[in-house]
Image (cartoon, rainbow, N blue to C red):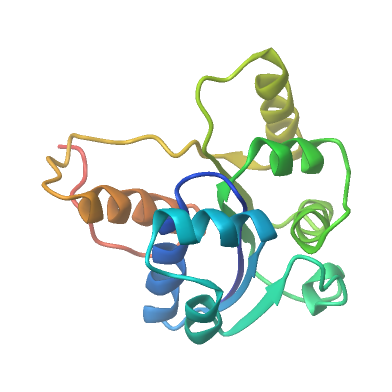
Length: 182
């Protein structure tokens, strides 16, 4: 299995990082992209940086490397997750603005009928945000807001993050174990 995972500048960088770690641990090829804003936010929120992403991903790209193989529909992959996804990125994808590798890859993913999961991290949402997210959904994307879930009775932030990551992985049909609703 091959997945593209992009991190944009929204808060919640640890969720994208942890998703890459868990996918790699399952033997999945991960083509990672981080936007310039993601790198800034990552340094602010975590102890990780671009060097770490390069070390764990199968292959790493910057957002301006539009020649990456998955910017073309001829590159076979099983889907793309944008975690976290800024409203700027979500809106760009919704309206066909493909000015960097993240939005171009997402556009290609949708046009090829592959799964696109957009893990939006913004609150509160105004009508413009909701309109863009509705448009993404209508285009076939899975809009997956990064919201906390408490029925698993998490004791740590890591447990909250891992629960969300597991749910995102399931969107791609990946078997994961976690505490489910009973």
